[in-house]
Length: 379
Image (tube, rainbow, N blue to C red; front, side, top):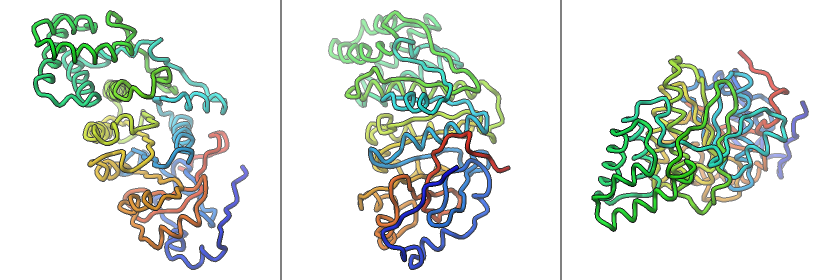
């Protein structure tokens, strides 16, 4: 395999930077697993193994065009091919499907709403628990903060599930008849939006996750301006994968499934729903589920960004010309202002600063994004 040569604007930078010299030192934790890349100006490989990591989760942060989607796809396909991981990826823009096709990977495409999302269906869970999941997804995605409206939504969903284990949105609308007109109208508008994902107010059905395969949930037909609807869909899919993994009775010490979420800022609504994401990430670790997130800024995770990053075993900060970006990154990558200046000179497209817990020291790495057939896992 041909590796991309490293070119720095200053041939002396690698020798005068203590930060870059330190990163050349061998670290035992990076000697086995999935190939992530090569240390800049060293050629030494950096590996990451989700099964032995402090956390199996990955966060990729970088601006538009920096290679976030490509990085996610590269790691996810390696996990699938080398570790037999079941993959469920949420594709908002259609980029993931297009790139997998270009690479020649086989995958299952679940095109929502042509294939119903089935958000009301008790997917690998009992109906009463599904009622709670649907309620939480609505409240967090649509920023429903009014207590009266929350209570009305909860009662309508709960009563609908008590009458049938597989209610429709029309059933839930019927349970709102006794609510105030204003509340009823507001909730009806929300249901109009999300029932589209399920194929209509009367639709019953649910997509299928096939074990051991790459499953793609395509949301590309939904307008990007409908952030609340997209966030609801992401929340339900995330919860579906947790339900699915909990039904497998797998050893949580080994990663059996991975959920891939590009454009994670939609799920958090620019930080407004970050607490729910944090809870889902924490819960995932107990079910052998790895979460792979990509977003444009550390600030997309809102007030919970420090705790979300602390629950991620692998953090990848892609090359970025913004000083503000690196200032945010420095809070978790233990780098000072002088090092930030050096990084902005040394790193180019395809490069990243990565942190692998429990080692707080970051590594400047040229990422490996070649096809998985060219790679090997070191055991």
